[in-house]
Image 1 (cartoon, helix red, strand yellow):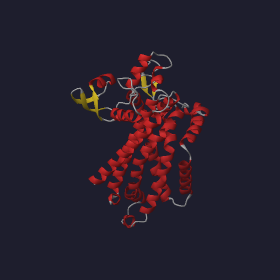
Image 2 (cartoon, one colour):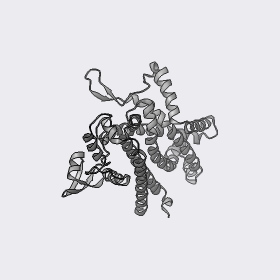
Image 3 (cartoon, one colour):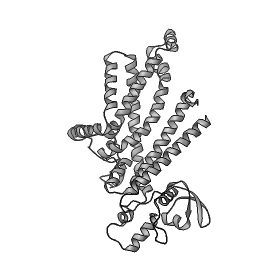
Image 4 (cartoon, one colour):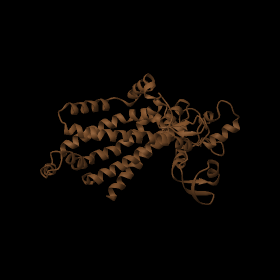
Length: 355
């Protein structure tokens, strides 16, 4: 088992290295970063200092090759890295450092500063990350709470209108893109029917208190984007639960439970569902990572302040450090959740660990 876990972690790290490489060479070549930082005005000294900070030139004013820039970038974003005292102070690096002038450190990754706000990218993204996690968790909770009972009902009422409706609805849910459903739901429930639903077409997860003027958590704006994001996993969980329950209902232990005189409700929900949930549980774990990626479009449509909204706004403003940081954080979460899903597969079904 430990060898299996180690292999998955190594694969995840290789994928992350590939993503880091792609992100750097994709975005680093757009425009002059120093000009983007200081705008169209600024003296040559200021531009030179900025170019040094961005690893475009060295202390002698000589240009640094793209490969060297990449190595500096890796050193900045790596949790384990080597930095000078000046770097640690200038970049305000947070972590544990040991050594002399050149220090080995275990630190929070340094993702540079935003071109527009001049704030550290890490702070910008960490402020937005809770919104994305909140949205993905709410969507998955909605999918679980509705999808599992619907799948069980469809299986126990096979070939009835309930089963047909559940299957047909699942096909629509799987086929419909999130951005398309988001536009329809936002317009219908947040605009046309807003007087009845009390919901708005867009809104953040933080609202201003009308009396004190302080920010407070507002879950009202979470409803529509969570429904939009949860439609696809809801459809898949319904289909998986239905298929798994149909297989379980043909097993000998189910017939034995009926023969003992147990009620249909107890046999289905206690004995049947318990054994049918293994593939559903592993699918839920994997789909949570998918929701983090899918949230980017949904957040932008509904104005929900998360990684997706911040990333799209940064793209519009050519704020590439924010875009690069957002892609790396989203990719890291995606890889970590998929590693956990693979490990869970191995726990639930030991056959997947067989080499």
